[in-house]
Length: 440
Ligand SMILES: Cc1cc2nc3c(=O)[nH]c(=O)nc-3n(C[C@H](O)[C@H](O)[C@H](O)COP(=O)(O)OP(=O)(O)OC[C@H]3O[C@@H](n4cnc5c(N)ncnc54)[C@H](O)[C@@H]3O)c2cc1C
Image (cartoon, rainbow, N blue to C red; front, side, top):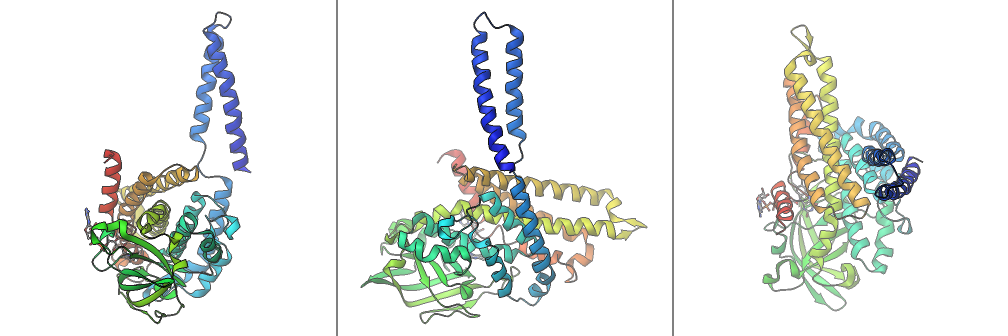
């Protein structure tokens, strides 16, 4: 409804603008006096002000936030700390419920069983889930990456085969891009795909493939052009189908989880491909050597979603710290009475809000079809720094208890550290942003 009113407001404003422009134009003619013109200009300023202060979030967005917040508080918050402590993966029941609620198909069109919501809604869902547990907010990142790849570059057959399952949460995916010797430098990837009959044979290594064991499909970036000088121009994107399980289940792919500091709800695997056959119809777009460019189409969405995850995680840390500062007393008074603590709370809240608005702003651009790689990069890099700051300060407010396993702030702090490392490190993000600014 609010969105409808917003549209009416914009259309009415435009109509009024035309009338006012007409009046101003006529002022140059003698029949209109100065007062009329003054009124017209004031009207114009009012309209512009009205548009500028219109909230980005609609009532529909707030509705979505309330629903996801309820789900998070009921299903995730009560179990996250215990699961993290024992390094357990996200329970299947939680993923099943997320699927039923449509969280995996938020931005995909209804014709492929998606919900067709906007990117701001996607950010809100990611934010609220990550407030409970970063890992839960991160499961959907994989569906967004593979789903966007298939939607933007897949053949109609690939869209029909994979997209509805991804949107309904029945096909889980994992991204196998990084290699042991090739992280930020995508163009140096070595995993080979050689054409054989009606398919390809994949040989080589991948690493950090998160959720690989529980994915039905691995989205694999492989080298189809043997000339290493071709760099990113020789890469292709494949959808490798496999069985799901607690370990890697594929006759030609083996792998071991990498022990990590945090982010325990999902396991990240080093993978070895040994004569792994992929039918040619699973080459995205059925086009060789387009993989890198196809991947770039997912960067905006994935970075926005990652920035939103950081905002949600920081929100959890901030809320915990705020509550604790009112409950914990020292020197005969709550610690929130001390200026040093109040300064921290104020700074945390301000940075958090700035990051959130940056995310919504970039999502708003994406929703209106504008290029937003610069803004998405800024949102990602700023949120990564923000979440480290906020989780660190939250731990500081908790004092020694913050370092214990008794409270979840230690988890927030460990989980927050990863944001600046994946989906493009902060150094690479700064480089990309600077390149756009310098128009290199
Ligand atoms: C928990 C976790 C989960 C992950 N999940 C996945 C996943 O699901 N799928 C996947 O494919 N990958 C995943 N990754 C991998 C992640 O995307 C890479 O770690 C990341 O791209 C960086 O690559 P690297 O680790 O090889 O670091 P490197 O590229 O070796 O970088 C090392 C350091 O050098 C800096 N650096 C490199 N090049 C430049 C440059 N040109 N200018 C300035 N600085 C530079 C980097 O910023 C970094 O500080 C995951 C990583 C982690 C930690």
